[in-house]
Structures are given as structure tokens and as C-alpha cells.
Amino acid sequence: MNLRALVTGGSRGIGAAAAIRLARQGYAVALSYRSNRQQAEETAAEVERIGCRAVVLQGDLADAQQARDMVREAAEALGGLNALVNNAGYVQRVSWEEVSLDDWNRMMQVGLTAPFVCAQATVPYMKEAGFGRIVNVSSLRALTGSAHGVHYAASKAGLLGVTRSLAAALAPHRITVNAVCPGYTATDINREVLERNPEKISAQVPLGRAAEANEIGAVIAFLCSEGAAYITGETISANGGIHMR
Ligand code: NAP
Image (cartoon, rainbow, N blue to C red):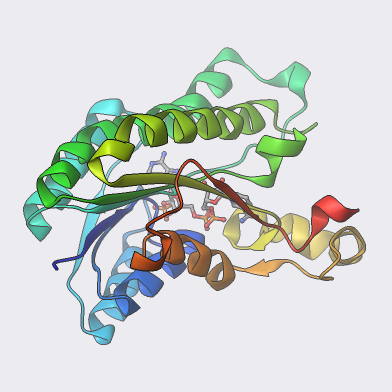
């Protein structure tokens, strides 16, 4: 079977780790970036070293039309799609009183609208292939809320609703839809917080450290594997046991 995946935000961090893991499972991978072309090309080179096809795509997912175009370009380049990893995202550390309407809208566009639009655009290719895997990268903050990112937490919580709704709608087509909620993960998105407060993180997390991007990529790749065929509508937390504290 031809395995073909689009990983949004696959240039670096968790998305790059997922793209590399998917390649090890035999997936040709289209990976997208917004501004960091060099990192996207480095990740694509890594996928090719594994022996799989890699395609690099640029687009700003704050724009729904660019999100749709990205899916079409990925499917055209790879000859179809049977996996979508909605991973691209960003954080903005700001108190809830200071979130402007522009801040709110942009966060929703990138974190909630784009994953939905990408799923809508991808499903016809999955139906054609006879199966599909959608993995939405949410966050621990979807479950706990965030005093310094209400819009981030809200977009990630909304994504869990999208996950369960699409899982119900797409099950008859052998398309599974799941979410991953990473806890603290060592990537550019939170490097500053992790470096400023290493003791705080190790005190909060029973496993005593932040995750490596690769450890989250492994969960995403598992959900895209044959072995995950009977898992749908599920949210998997990968947070070092933080719920136990
Ligand atoms: P990262 O290293 O900062 O990577 C973010 C990726 O998203 C990059 O590829 C970036 O592209 C892309 N991106 C950002 N804004 C975009 C936009 N408007 N349009 C298109 N692409 C955009 O972050 P990460 O830590 O790997 O995060 C990946 C996902 O995991 C995010 O959804 C994040 O919310 C979630 N998450 C992360 C953590 C954590 O602790 N790291 C915890 C929970 C959830 P460029 O390279 O071109 O900038």
C-alpha cells in the first residue's frame, strides 16, 4: 500500500520528529513550514535518507485558502494522501485581559480552523485510498486551561471537539481521527520557559523532565500505523504523568 502523509509544521520540533518517524514506517511525507525553509529542507533530507519521498510546502495556516491549497499541493505531489497530522501551532504568552481580538482570531485560525479545513480538504483523498488517519496535535493546556494563554487553551480544547466529531462522522470510511496532548516538550516553542525554570518543570512532572520531540512524534506515528486501526475519537496524553500531581 502507498502510504502518504501531510505533516503541517513539519519543519521542526514535534512535526519534524513525527515526519521522520512516519518515514521509518514507510510514509512518503509532505511537510509544511511558514517561514523556516532551511529547517524544512533539513527535515526533508532526513526523510529522504530513510528512503522515502519528501516534499516541502510553504503556507501560512492563518489563511484558510492557503491551508486548502497546501493539502491539494501535497496530494498532487505525492499522488494522494492517507494521513494528515495537524501539528502546526504557536503560543503567545499573555494574560487573558490583554488578549486582543486580533490575537484571539489568529490563534483560532491557526490552531482550530486550519486543522478543520485541512481535514475537510484531505478526506476525499482518504476515501479514495479506502482508509485514513488524522492526528490532531492538541495540548495539555486543552485539559488544564492556561492562565497565560486563554486563546491557546481554547483553540486546543476546541480541537478535541473537532477530533471526536470527525471520528464519529468518518468511522464508516475507515478513517480514524485522534488527538495527542503533549505536556512540556523541548522545542523552540517553549525553550525559554524550560531554560528559565528547569527545577519547576522537574518538580511538576513525575517523570522529572520535559519530553523530547521524538517521544511525541512516536505517539503520532503510532496513531498513523496499522496497529492503531481500532483507535478512534481518542485523546492520548503524553505528559510525563503530570495529571498525577
Ligand atoms: P515549534 O518547534 O515552534 O514548531 C512549530 C511549527 O509550526 C513550525 O513548523 C512552524 O513553521 C509551524 N507554524 C507555526 N505557525 C504557523 C502558521 N501560521 N502557518 C503554518 N505553519 C506554522 O513547535 P512544537 O513545540 O513542535 O509544536 C508543535 C505542536 O505541538 C503545536 O501545535 C503546539 O501547540 C503543540 N504542543 C507543543 C508543546 C511543547 O511543549 N512543545 C506542548 C503541547 C502542545 P516555521 O518553522 O516555518 O516557523
